Image 1 (cartoon, rainbow, N blue to C red):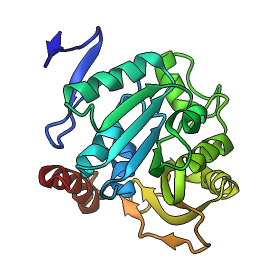
Image 2: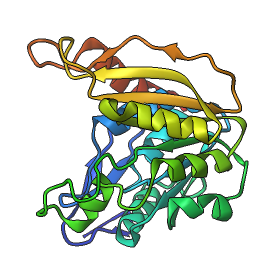
Image 3: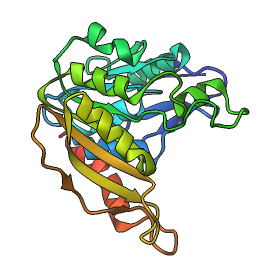
Image 4: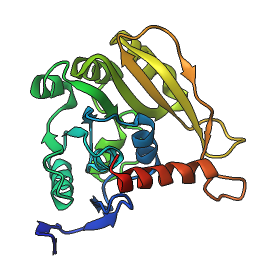
Length: 257
C-alpha cells in the first residue's frame, strides 16, 4: 500500500493525528500514540525557532505534535530500534516535514556526540516506564523495548539531555508519579533544575498516575507546582481541561504558531 509515494509495510496503518492534517504511521504490535504523548507535547510548549531533541522518539508521534505546535521549530528525533525509526522517517516524509524533523537511529546516550553538545533549546522524552522483566512476556519485542528501560538509567537519560541543552535550555518529560523522586534526583544530578511540575490524575478522587516535569539547565531552586490535571469527569467523559489541551494543539496547528 502506498500514500503520497510512502510505502506502508505489512501490519502498518496510517492514522490521522487530527492536527495540521498530519498523519502518523503506526503498528498494532508497537507502542502507539497515547494521551501521555499529547500531554507532553502540550506541556513542553515549544517556542519560536526552538531546536528540539526528542529522545527515544518511537514512531515520531511527539516530534510531529511538536512540529504542529510551532511552525518554525526543528526537531531531531533519536530512536534505538531501526524498524521503528524507519516508521518515524516515513511519517515525516508523508507529512512533507523533512526540512524540520529529522529522525536518527541510535542510542540516545550517544545523541550529544551525534547532534552536538549545547545546541538545543528544548529536549523532550517520554521514557520507558517499566523495569526490565516486569512486563508480560507476550508483549512484542518492539513494544517491550518501548515500555521497559533495559540498561538505560535515568541518570544516563538526564546526562544526555543536559549535554544536548544550551544554558537555560529546557528538558520536559512525563513519568510515573510513584517514581517521580527518582527522576527529580537524576535531573538535579545532571544540573537540570526542576522548575515546573504538574500531577496528572485519571479522576479527581484518584492519586496522580504520572507527572509532567520541566527542568532548566543551570537554573536556581524555585519549584512551581501547577494545578492538578484531571483527565476524566465522574461519568468517564473527557474533562474540560483535557478537551482544551487537544483543542490547543489543533488551534496551534491551524494558526501555524
